[in-house]
Image (cartoon, rainbow, N blue to C red; front, side, top):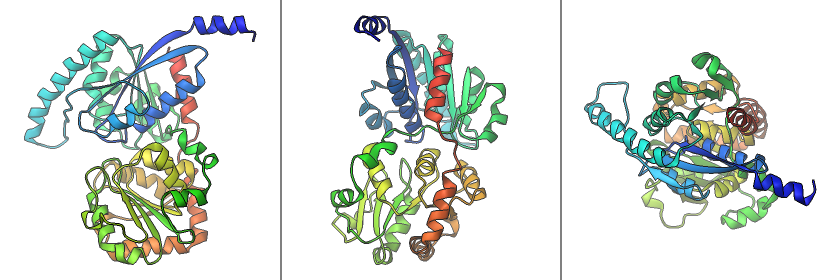
Length: 376
């Protein structure tokens, strides 16, 4: 391509406005950021992509989104519970307010396409976008369809899904793609060697590393178990513990040998600790499960009881891709014993690593980018 032809392409680029909606937890945020990354990388010669994000006021998403240079707007967030609660009556009014807030934002911005990956903040904003005639793409992460996605699915043009079984939930609109992952997960090995990373995180060279993750907003129950087990755990491994915002273990704020805690890590540092970890202990939101599947990490999963996470875990259990522990039956002794057994059993680590890579379909970033190009 000569310089004149390239200049003409740049001059004739179309500006496409894409509204991304999600928040409350990090679970609905990561796949949308992965999609935005893919569009910026793949389609730069044909379109200029202009992004706007609508999220909650107090969730972790603002920090995640603004680091990616995406403008961020907040609306009131209401939630409809599937059980009787007086809070439902209050939240009905919040949802109505959020609809008008969204409508005001969108009348001014006028998106070409709206993308959501669930969460209740999405419902009024997607309704408002549809009311204004924007096309809608929904991504279904979990095995069990969430109420938010059920409410907005009828007005969606396309619904991408992580698992093949979800095709039956959404009919002809559904396309099986897997779950998008952030680009930083695939390039970190080229940036720093493991030895250098261990120095960066003040870790010992020859002691195994267990990464413990409570999910985007943390898990108080897991944090308590770690606190109770810590004296035994640090005898045979080093712990990197992601506690969640405002959920740090207060008794261990001072430096403790073989234990480091963080409330939150951005995607770059998260990619680094993933690569450092010999084994991972985690909650079971689809964002972190997708990362673990992509990286092939040997993992112990502790689903949130009586939630959609148990459905997610069932898929991994069927594939023999993880050790599954039930929180209601878990003690500090059992947690310590399971982590120790996995760390010492290299053959089991290898088997789990191989199996978990097969659970979630790869290539979702590219597949969704192509869906978006077709919709536009």
